[in-house]
Image (tube, rainbow, N blue to C red; front, side):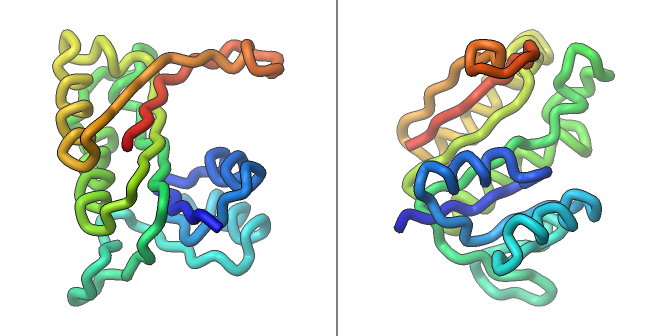
Length: 168
């Protein structure tokens, strides 16, 4: 059975979808305590880690080890990229955690990646932030595609546009 690792797991949206598609969740990384509680209820036997900055493949002092997976997934923080936010960009403290995806992907070398963020990433800093994200993902995977999808086109009673990246 193919496995996935979930970064910025939140309430487990990617996790539930992949599980329903036949994948097994190997581990989750989520810093928010309330989200971690919900994840623990839904995936009780799955290893869970807190701060993404302290997880790694190689054991070093104070780091937690991640199992290799077939797919790496996550929705990295969007507050500084959203048109509704301060637009601080990918270099900010929260949205800058994107670079942890790159670090972890380089360490565990998963064949596939699936990530999401807000469409505001496309225009952040005149598109330069999108260029940086693509550059970072291409350091880990030779092919990176992206598209904006809207939940209203998938039998959900709301409009929620998100930018998805598929890497392989």
